Image (tube, rainbow, N blue to C red; front, side):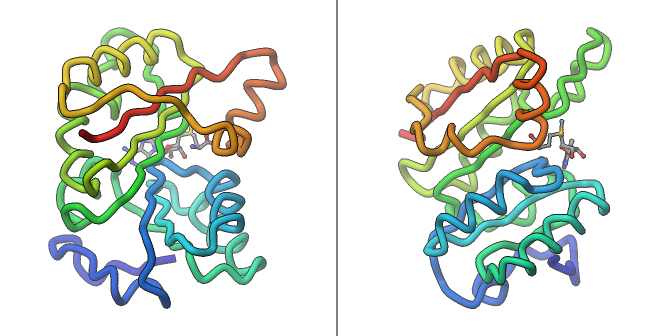
Length: 190
Ligand SMILES: C[S@@+](CC[C@H](N)C(=O)[O-])C[C@H]1O[C@@H](n2cnc3c(N)ncnc32)[C@H](O)[C@@H]1O
């Protein structure tokens, strides 16, 4: 797990990983079932998992160590703050957001991570032609996601690669086991 010495200074990515490689980020990675498996399959990519709950990040750490992965780090911080202040601009080739908290009550929707401000936040950290991959079980949130990205003309809707969709997250496995399907969206920075 990454210990932040300052939450005011941007991360020095050269000190974070043993190898300089392309970087992908997962926001709200939970206990990192997806990220650990994805990092295991792609040792030529560096990964940062962002999560606000310590217990879940400790699981990321434990799983990563058990597999001897050098290419995965966890950061305990709020996702929007991470995008705005900590990740240096144009450093991520992909950002993954899977099953973000849906905040189903109407009066709580302002807490949703994917809101009107999100496309600009994520654009800041993406390299040219960088990708955003999203999944949710919540039809209303999915509609919000679709509308928010439709309003950002610097993103183009695209498809989620089959091999990526095949790596499921912890929450996804639970939802799918209950017969609740995964709604997926993918966007490419123009
Ligand atoms: C519904 S869970 C999904 C976890 C994982 N992505 C999965 O699909 O199994 C949402 C996760 O995002 C984390 N989270 C929610 N809002 C966050 C935020 N603003 N910043 C960082 N983590 C957040 C929660 O603590 C939780 O672990």
